Length: 504
Image (cartoon, rainbow, N blue to C red):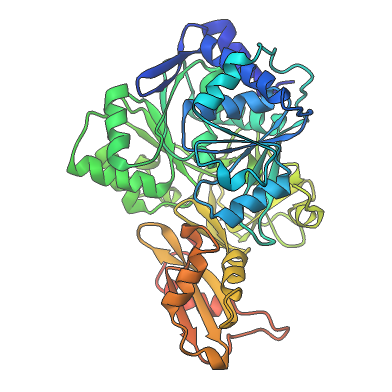
């Protein structure tokens, strides 16, 4: 039985003097990291928290974020990483829905002080809390079935769900990931993706377990990432495809010394083969690794290793094969497994599968059935076990590695008094993979409303990456099925003609 306390306990036992984190001119050994995590746990308890209470984080990548990501659940509480790109209404929804007791943040605390009982800014307040707290033995009275984190996938509408991941879920994913890349104590891992995202947090526990060194990049910029790779002799990192593309272009235009890179993993959305080719040209020493999964899977389901070697191979367009310890099947709606090459829904079983959605039993029952997680992704598996995605069965858009539920966008549009009908869907984009597009029918008396007005309205209600990049305004009703459901496939089709697949 393992909990989140165990990776840190192991590093403390075997490599207490080894450098755990480097951030700017600061560095922390594993002994120092463990001390700070233990004091953080005691500090949280002083606010009257009980086991299982929620502690949210709203901050950029930092050593404090790593401390909280590990120290909060290791002390028996539940960590709630918040998306820093979310608009205020979306953040407030997650805080209220999770009944968060403490918010740790590097932002202005004022907007949250009426929502959360205790707001602790990173900086002097946070350091004072640690200094005045006593050491707590991490992992006491914590078991693997305890909830470790709530990870919110949506916004302010019914699509917003808190994914419940236990210690067992996250430790299982840690084991699975370690079998993929072979972490070692000599690794120097750059945290480039935001840590609220799976791409940013996925390597925290494996890196600690192997007593490697983590170097957080506070905010992604391709030039800054390359500078960090050069100055800190980075060996590995995980990014989303748009980040990898930007880093490759910057490296080819303004080369840095990046020969220390051994592997670069990417996930969050599929990637164009041209981006892989450019990335291999830019970082010839690095193995490129594609990871497919979801927050509900802690997050890894399949992996494609040595992607740079598969440019002329059909397998290069797959998302790889199931990782050791995870069972992936392609199933028909009946639940029966399809034949190899036949399209069905991707269904995943394993110790990494979430416990469900926080306070949402109906949504949980819809995806956790027949002892597996039904991902909503449509695909097929070839004779060698490679999984190929062809479409998405749920109305979700993946833009730059971020999930956008179409219902969130439509809800925002419907709040505008001029909107009679609205449909949002993903269209292909060279940079982001997909971007949000909307089609709107206005009320007869509101024909003066423009697309620009509606886009500005959306920006006040949802995160910027969810806002439609373009809106078509029509004077005819949207196409509908017999029961009256909007036929989004008909609206999407013109944008995807000539494409190899219907999702990016």
